Length: 109
Length: 113
Image 1 (cartoon, rainbow over the protein chains, first blue to last red):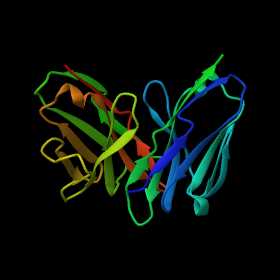
Image 2: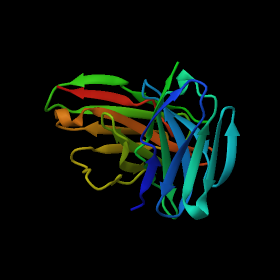
Image 3: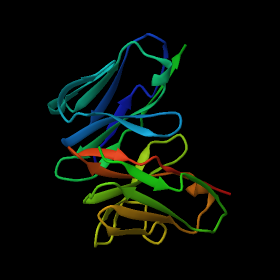
Image 4: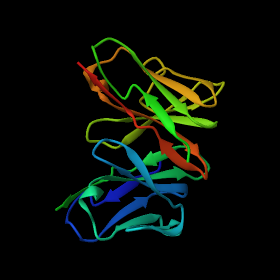
């Protein structure tokens, strides 16, 4: 099956710093989402981005489907950005969504 | 976007018992998905539930352990049967709603003693 690899696995930032999270996938996908899981366990959809670039406030994402990777940019990080960021992909021709292992982010005040 | 409600939000269960988790979507959806998240881990797909047919289980998950019902296009249940401490996890219900976005319920956090 498809492999989804996220890097880095862990990240510690000082408040105000910028960061880039990466998601590599091993096969063609028909959808890709970035989620943030907050410390209370709630999964929040950040972006639905099977291709192209989107921005939402301090967050932006880019997916290059032909090269099988996606990037999530966090600018001017805040302590509330702490949590786990998951990349999740759907394989072309299928309906299942497979999650990467996640990047655990801690933003220090 | 659609709202997905799950209950219970959390429960503490005794070994050997079973618990049924309910999932309600505020709009009709074709497929509903059940995931498990073990402590400190990512999400693993348990099964896909379609109305009117038996659920499709992923490798490592069986119907006897995780029976699923899907009586209509807005509701599904997942039962965790004959629980052991290894079943302590967060169980999440999800569905694809408007514009193909996968949306999750808040999850059901189970602790098995």
